[in-house]
Image 1: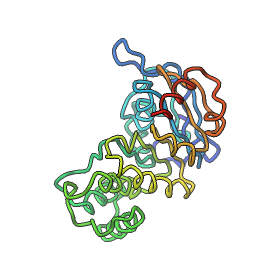
Image 2: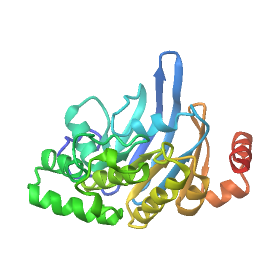
Image 3: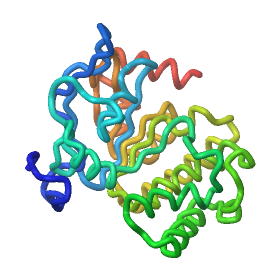
Image 4: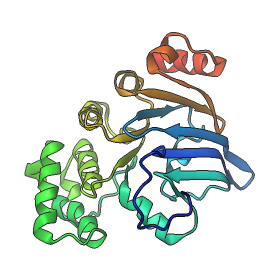
Length: 257
């Protein structure tokens, strides 16, 4: 199924995301070393690990923000490669929320949300605005629709970024350390929104250092170190009885902090 064109329907039997022995180098540095991982449709996977472990690189390869060097990545049966049709097809169905909010500073909150649906999906403005307002209500900031991003708090800007991604009606959502740029008092509001989204059954992969969030909401936790998956499994088991010494050391440090 990996040879399909970008406009074909997804394979309902395929994993939502499949990494098959994926490697990625930045010069002489191996960011990913033969990573294999399958994410089932509707599964909530949290990826954690120390800084530089390859977490963000892994999910950035899903929608070709980074190009992997070896192995295969398939999204709903479509192989991620250099074919621009496939890249466009994947990006239409995979939403992403970044560490820094990446909002257009000169556009209002509403304009930020309707831009992609109109340009990429061909949605009429009235329909796009109605959709955007529904998602801004879901993330609990509809009253901010006409403001520019600089007038919002960091937590509000990240909620706008989540609403903007949802306006493309993706089947998969990727979160790359969505709270790392926030002040401590703003982290909970963003995690609460992501938690509510998780309950809708959407496929989600979240890179985070928020271990309480991982424990509550993940179906599976994946621990990475030095570009490799060291251990994976249900959060309760990994927290209660981690097998890998590197994971035991990581949890001891992060839970102590």
